[in-house]
Length: 426
Ligand code: ADP
Ligand code: MG
Image 1 (cartoon, protein in one colour):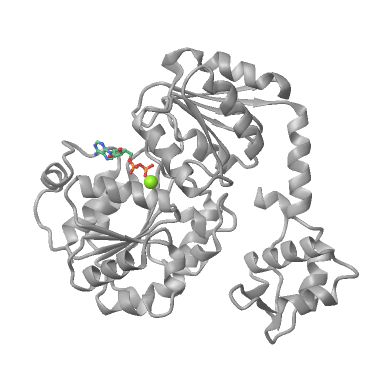
Image 2: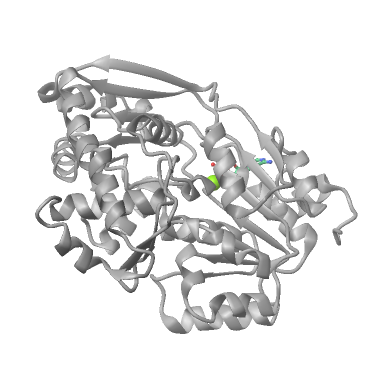
């Protein structure tokens, strides 16, 4: 039962400053306010955050928001704080004292939104702390991360479902921009949302022009420079296939307009400052690996260029989705050549060992927990170290093994018959 009885449009204006709902937002908000679990699939930039934020305000109490990335959490907290809401977040990038204060504020009912990273739930005592004062709503942002069939699987998301019952009766809202029907089913199963309402809205972004063009690898730098020389094609994001390539391209473009590289190999301070400078407009272009951008909300990105063939369609969709969030015409340009396929073949072969090898590793898992290192050693003659690790990971993802990564131990289920095939993963 919702505490809020007034007009939702009035609340939208008063609390968020928006005069009207965007397509589908109102229906989703109503369902959430009424306490229904729901799955929301809506394009990037379409305003999914509001679909949990407004119901949270309408229902009162504290909303718990699970978010996969520190940058994303920081971005959303900053926005909500600027809008005058009381917000706290808990993640590994913060001092312990900040997290402790966030817990105290949560227990006192002093905050309206608490953002957490999923791995926080594995900290002993933390779920119990949350359960002491139950949230009024639970939002799971970027919910596709829960599914191995999605493009951005995170093992910690997989654990979420087991913590939800203790936090009920709050409605659970799963939100994502990219979920195939398989991923949708998987999200609902994993989270135990049998009765969820489904709001599935198209993937189409009518203001994005998608262009695919064949350009030999050595010519791509010049081609990108040429495309982005025109200031009306910036700000821009260029996705590079590797860290080194990102740095080279960034150096080349930086001669023409302020550009920096962004990848997971850079220290966190540098990554943060690149992101901030891009958001504020100081940087006109970021050349990034896929580490950049999930959920980052910069409205006026005019061009997203892929300097190489991306590895998955879902990832590609998310990446080009960062263009044109303001609704103005924007371009997504993909450069490829036949040579790109070889790189993907290499990674595909590495990441998906042949089924007989996976089966061999599975057969070596007993019913009792065993140290991974012992199993690895026992199979050393037949399976190399890296393949062993990948096979265990695949067995874990596909439900054939229980792996306690903290204690470096694993055991098999008796009945592994799970799907394992390259096609359906990609
Ligand atoms: P996503 O669906 O990708 O999560 P966001 O929730 O980040 O999208 O929203 C994208 C942008 O749209 C944000 O800047 C947000 O403030 C804005 N927005 C959302 N709803 C409305 C609305 N009803 N009116 C105007 N702007 C809105
Ligand atoms: Mg979002």
